[in-house]
Length: 343
Image 1 (cartoon, helix red, strand yellow):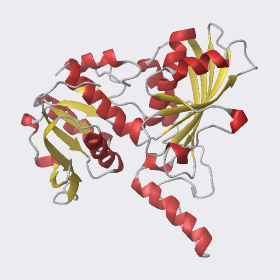
Image 2: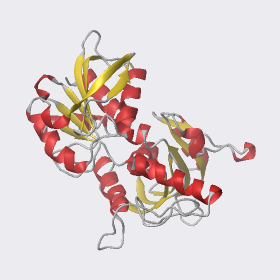
Image 3: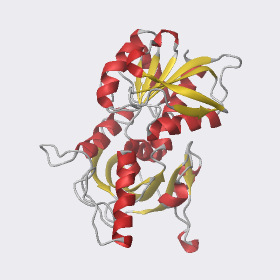
Image 4: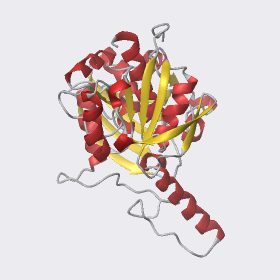
């Protein structure tokens, strides 16, 4: 991507000390984002600590005391309640906010963007000065669905997710580590705090709270966000499961299309699509796993095969780093399109 030469921007990273915030800093540095001055913001508890960026130690500032008037881009990942207060304040000061939280995603005036899927929607940032980053599990799925939808029109999607604990934050990762260590090294058990059950050596078929329709909030995020990003006519049902994996979400995706699409055709289409890497050769045991996808930017698609239970059906295995493409990278890619085409 060619960014505007010579033009630099003041950037604020809100929630800079969290998992996603730290990943945003890594990606801004590795992609050489055109930064004039970088401001690291967090709660008063983290204010005064330092984070390294481009060989310098930057002091984390208190979000509550910060003035966004001289900042052009704000990359937010502090939690929905905090974003609900400070994202509008930043936007009112002239800062374009890319928000990683769930708070603004379904606001009809706020674009919900995956750059490989609906980049033109970014222009709607003028409505409120805010762009929403979708849910991590939604992002990797729609990256894989978009080229298939363009080729054969998707009618229905059934998805089951296998989501890593990093999606629930550092405390969740610590809980998996401590429970695993306790099982191996002691006779003591570490009771669950972040999850409803012990996560070590277990699967939990609940992510977020249950809703009146029997689905969890995470499942309905995938339904509603896919419709907003890709196509409101797509029917989708989801089951989201937390698994004892530290990083990278995996998804088993079944797709029904209006027009026939063979696995070979799908494989060729996906291999040419932006942001996707096809790793799919069963004869050589080639498929992607979370461990292999960690730290990588691509959305990986494997096990592309016909769903023989329906007339025009395909099945896919989709794996992606939820802290990178599922959050930080997607936000930085949005910012890159902002500075290239809009600001």
